Image 1 (tube, rainbow, N blue to C red):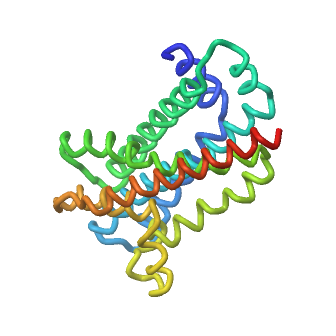
Image 2: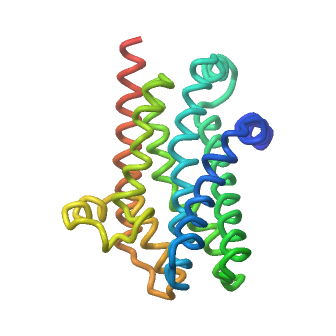
Image 3: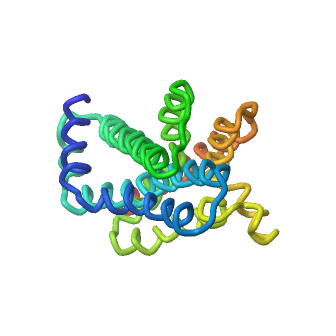
Length: 239
């Protein structure tokens, strides 16, 4: 599986320059816009840095995952693996490991931006925790990408992919959650993105780990896996 993960890393990340803009540069530009051009307190700069780390993970986990899986299907790459003595779970595991590494890189790139432009410094222990736990908590977001990919159509993925920006807004990544209308907050606080954001902010603020949010992410993962499994079974039956 190591060889497959290495191959996937080259073809998905190194040969796809769009990744650098959408998954890394776009969150960095948002961060600089809201912390350097507009007035911002040190606390806001720190919290918004975490928000953009999660936003970068959201972009990579949903849009890039969905597009990669659909392209593999359309090109015949995924079907080729099915006729080879290659377990399907290995394909998804190697894809998942590549995007986990991508998310780790995104967190590091945003952290470097916060340090260079705003002087935000975390302890080495906290950095290691953020680098590991944010990409890990983003697992349900990857499952959203896999769910979108079951459409098997790039146009459909690009249309449905707008859910990324909707989730970013209602979960308080672009704007402080408290400034959103009450009815938006009522919806946003039950999204997986909100759970990831609150857990990450709690870590940098020194708060106790909220197991309720973790349970929410696990519940979302179960729901998404069940939906993916049901749709895949339906597709096999119809074909």
